[in-house]
Amino acid sequence: MKNIFSLSAIVILLLPTLSSCETEAERARRIEREARIEQERLERLRKIAYEDSVEAVRVEQERLRRIEEERIRQEQLAAERERERIKREKEAAERARYINNYLTTGTKPWKACFGSSNSCSGYSCSKIQVKASYSSDVIVTIKRNSKVFRHGYIRKGDMYTFNLPDGTYQPFFYYGRGWNPNKEMPSSTCSSLKGGFIEGENFDKDYPQELRGQILSYELILQENGNFSTKPSSAREAL
Image (tube, rainbow, N blue to C red; front, side):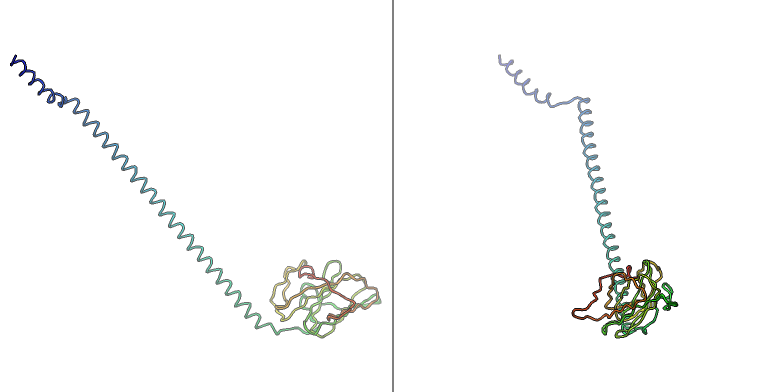
């Protein structure tokens, strides 16, 4: 009996040793599995690193794009400020040059577009007399059939007479101060109209008037209970 118990004890002691052993095939599979796991881990790390680098490049490109857009915007603002500065300086120089400039009464500054005639021969003639106010020079344009038929510059306080064949005419009044001969003016009939006031511009008009051997007089002076009241107009309508 003593020997049997001893043998059993030996068997029990050997079992852990046998269970901890692995075959060469098992060991190879384990190593392969661990290697695959490590490879997958490395692949994940490389993928993460690549994605991080791609994102980093994208972020950097976006940052550089915003910097470039801001640079362009600032350059455009600087260019616009420079254009505005040059424009203001030019306008200031022109104002200083022309603010006290004026033409003599009867001058036809737009004769290249509207002609310079002021004559009417025969018996079927009428007249339009215009007396300018004492505060502003004025150019009068007189339209016939929607086209400027007569025009003339009248110095403040002066009077000028337009001679016209009988017909229906509509007078327009362009007031202002400081005559600039180079100023471009909008016109519905002439694309190269130059010359205009640089300060206090205003356009008025009267209704069309039919004249038959008559004299129509305008006195452009503010008066209480006057018998004539002008209506607002514009450069394109008057010219």
